Image (cartoon, rainbow, N blue to C red; front, side):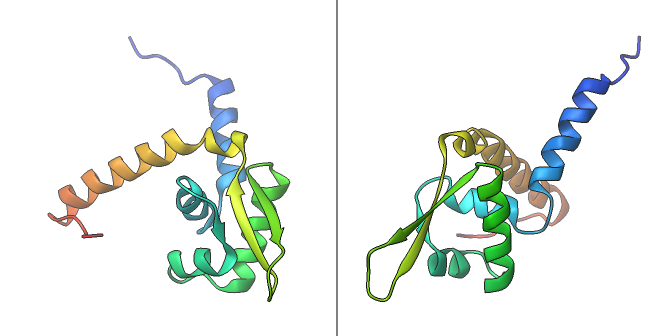
Length: 115
């Protein structure tokens, strides 16, 4: 017997994809899963993202209450980003994506990238 996909689940997946869409948001969340980071450190960690795009994606994540932005009292002034408690609820999803990606790379390419 084939079970039909629940429309509520499809809508929920679509909502999630709307929030996390784009090339960089999931990588930003993954980078922040383990510790807060300064803007410049995030830009170094996420290869290929421009400062303008990183700033835009961080603003979207902040609007969706997944990330907090803290201006540090340093000279020169720097900004630090961290996942909110709500944002940390995505950690298990990020870990599952990483595990799946590692297995997929092994299956398709036959090897795993080294850290």
